Length: 110
Length: 112
Image (cartoon, each protein chain N blue to C red):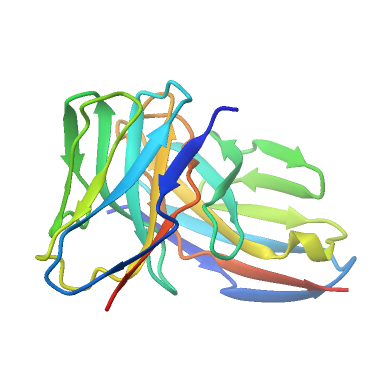
């Protein structure tokens, strides 16, 4: 059974204080790992897809990296508008569905 | 503007009533999905459809039903058999079953 564990459950940062969110996974052959951002009361917004170990993708202050067992979402010099819940999901090879983690709630204070 | 719409945004239901949640997309995506989100839990898959007139059960299909008569539409019915239906319901779509999924704004269902 595919499993996704995200840590920490919640993270509070000061504006400009860089940090990383972790997504550990077990899957029977990874096809893709997905990162989403979700604001309260809204649907998740797609951020990145990573396909193979060593791959990195960047968008503004966010950078996602992938190893064979985990992915990191690095947040550089965060701003209050980066406050949200960040969700990680995996898709196994040969399957069409995603397995989601419970998310990390990020709060960035000015 | 292409996107996914869900209606209504808020829905209240009395116990014993069936309700239908709407999901429409104009992205020309083949695959559509329904998820349920509860506080402190990850998204859980209810049903998904990879093509018109075909759909598969997800992890928590009991008490729910769907139809896929048109490519653009994938309505979800929450039946009276669903024991704990109060939750945030999310619809998603993807170009193909193995591509990234894009989500609608969600419907919050409350059973009174």
